[in-house]
Structures are given as structure tokens and as C-alpha cells.
Length: 190
Image 1 (spheres, rainbow, N blue to C red):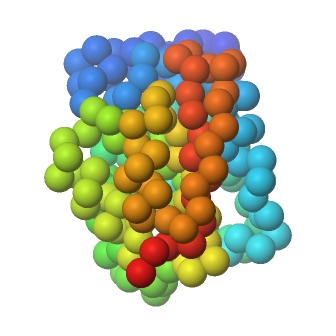
Image 2 (image 1 turned 90 degrees about the vertical axis):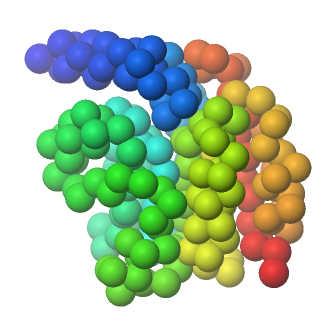
């Protein structure tokens, strides 16, 4: 039954948040409103390759799968083993473990760049070195005209994203627990 499955996913998410708060950035999965705000400005007909960083229970993953073109490729990363196993079972996708390995995963799959990177990683609580490594990978892996979309619970990452991208737009999504900022970024700075 779908209600039982949703409840199990939420309970697993809460358990992981309590036991591993530096890898799970929230007490609850993303709301429908946050997912819609993250994905609203994507021209799905032009996106051939996508990377999702920090998939959690797969709320964003499933929304991406519904929106993406049939032939586009999706690379999903989730570091937490139980969530990765659940995602693999739910989606049938290969789920990669560490977002820092994005460039290598793409290379192993015959790609050097992706058109879209969607990130739910909790940069504010990740160790600084991990955040730097992930963002280096984003910079190396995003196509010149690609888009990076991330959400955070504060504006803490705004200056970091502005150093990395020529264009950074933010919007606030109140209907999420907790409320979140969506960053929509384009144009990697060289």
C-alpha cells in the first residue's frame, strides 16, 4: 500500500537524520512545492543528461524521471547506504554513492558534461573539504550552457555559488519543512 510505503520512507529519513545529521540535512523529505520550484524552469526537451546529488528518499529523483525526455540519461548520487538501496529498488536505476565522484562516473559512462545538475546536498553542514570537492566536480561536469539547481535552508551558500557561476538567482519556498531557498545557477566562471 502506497501510504505504508510513504510512511516507511519518512521514518527511514528521520532515523537517518537523527543518526547522521551531517549527511542528511533535513528531518523530512522535500515537499511537492519545493520539488516543483526546483524543476520549474527546466526545458526538459533540451536536457540530454542529468546528475542528481543527494537523492535522499527519491522524491526529486521520481519527479525528474517523470519530467525528463525518454532518451535522456540520469545519474543519481546518494551517500547513505540504506537510502541508496531503497532508491535502487524503487527506481531500477544504478545509484552512485559519493557526489565527489561525479566527474569519474560520467567519464566511465562515456560523458564529460551534463546539461543539468540538481542538488539537495546540505552544503552548510557538510565538512568544508567535501563541499569544495563536490563543487569542483560540478564545475568540471556541467556543460557550458548547463544549469545547476540546488536548495538550501539559508543563503549561506550564495557567495560560494556566485564565485562559481556568472548568474545566480534565488527564490524562497515557504511550503517546505523547513522553508528553503532555491538557487538556480548558470554559466561556470573560468
